[in-house]
Length: 309
Ligand code: RRO
Image: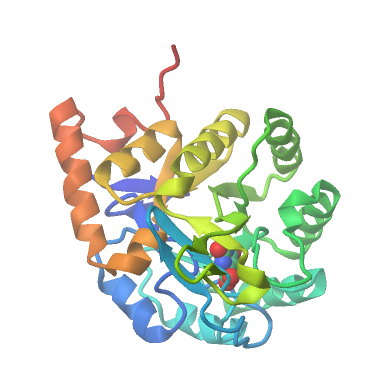
């Protein structure tokens, strides 16, 4: 039984990795991911310069997931470039997440990645819901088109985009049309957290996190059906691009569902935050168990083969 797979020509020992933002802010966490059973890994979304992020508390565990308004705390792009230059690419592929605060910042950062000659794969985060005063770029379809045009001309290598969840078939159609105009967009990561949810503590009658009057991105089990829909919608509409699934993954069954819906790799966010990098050992064992029960020997026998009624 074989969990190995390929992504853009790169071999992975398993179709599993962290979601950006989780266990990847500093070198000690990045090294833990490198040592873990994850088949790939991604760095925390970075800005041009280091940021403290939003005031705490800014993450809260919920009954079926999490709410966060971290506000893009990160060490600045150079820190992650330094990691990328030391990463062991034979061990596993590295994705480099970028979330510049302006188009110019994004262009500066991607130029630096290009000059660094690392084999890291750019994941352009167009969906951060938590920087006060900054809308999620990928909900503004004109802005999405502009940034893809600019990055495509400034950056000579294949790259991917991290999208927010969409909730309407017309939006799947429109966003897929835009993405399909950009050949360098080789992969799509669906989904970021469901932006601007709210949860309330009954006893104190207060919100749970401090930033943005308690509003924050929702992750975990709450978002699984939305994540699967977005993975499958873009898998169907963007046949030349690979899909990375993210959202609601805490068991081998969830991993299997994402792969069946069309994901090539599956990211783990909230559950990794709660359980730590050992989670990849359990997810691999559970996925292997499901494959064995179903008689699948390899990932490619079922990846993207979701059936309809
Ligand atoms: O740092 C964050 O607040 C954050 C980011 Br950049 C993101 O893309 N998604 C999220 O849930 N939190």
